[in-house]
Figure 1: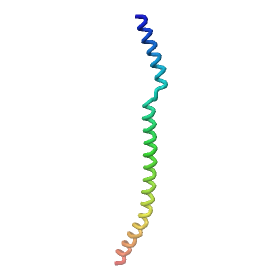
Figure 2 (figure 1 turned 180 degrees about the horizontal axis):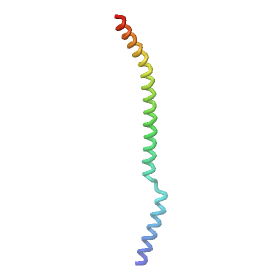
Figure 3 (figure 1 turned 120 degrees about the vertical axis):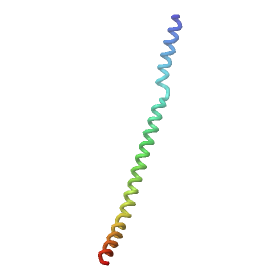
Figure 4 (figure 1 turned 60 degrees about the vertical axis):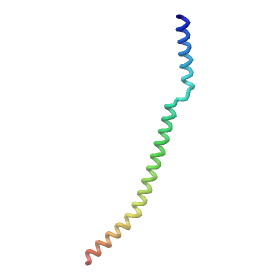
Length: 76
């Protein structure tokens, strides 16, 4: 009985020491998730910038068209 308890304690200590040298899969998953999140935020930022530029290009022409239409309606 004494040898069984000693064997269990030795195995526990060996497993405990090995656990420090094993790769932590949770850290890998967290790192991948963080990288994906950063990439997604960068893509979103770039898309918003492009949409803003497109809106600025299209907005002045829309305003000029409406002014022309309004002045034509008033003059008629």
